[in-house]
Image (cartoon, rainbow, N blue to C red; front, side):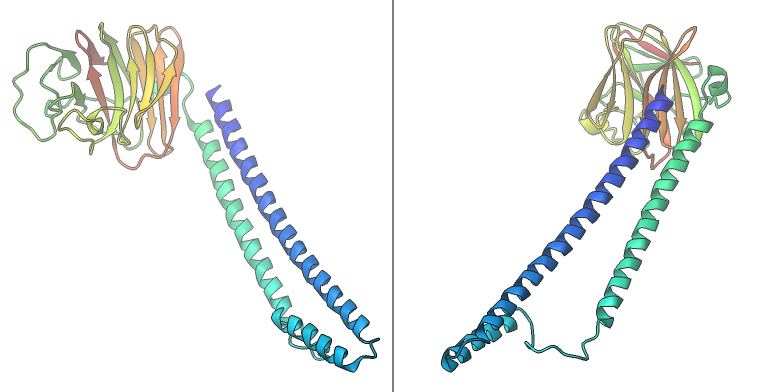
Length: 310
């Protein structure tokens, strides 16, 4: 279903681009035709005045009126009421030819962009795993980085499990540590394809995130919180709710019954997907974006809650 939705989205974008192009060219043609009609009407008006003037017998009136028509012609950038027999349209033909070439180059360039986008979508849809067994082929092992762990978080089982503790842990000072937000990052980053699963439990819930290493660590502002900045993407799991956050934008999701969550990242194609894992694999949320740096798995752990990397 996600693949179909993505195809529909790209088809809609392509159709919108075509419609916008047609609208722009139609408006340009109408503008040219309108200007041409105005110029023809003006020439016809002056021709009628000259025709009427040619029949006057009052020479003084003729001279005054002719001067008036001549001045109007000069204002409109017409140099003479006489037809220049040597007048050439070569410059006009060159301009039209040049415009035609520019339009052809523009259309060719835009077509190549659309074609590349369609090819990329086809590559994503054809190459992305569909079954859990296929996802597991891209399984990655991660360990939690003690140097990033907030002091309310206790690491265990070879730094693959994290739980909230009321008593502060005796971690040494480190510039990469989250000093106020109860978060932790993994030591290993993702720059290609990767899939991992976690298991969680607890009353206050947890957050499963991916983040750039450049996320802020000092203080409790949005720049430090997973999902509240442009540095991170976060799936928030509570006992009574589920949502996805990125750059402080919230997307409500259906309640998740399973305690096991699968995460898939394809850094090259900008794909991030979260799955509920039980007897079946259910897509919770899928993001299509552009990642500019290596991604690091991370977790926020609420009071009385824990997360384990499987």
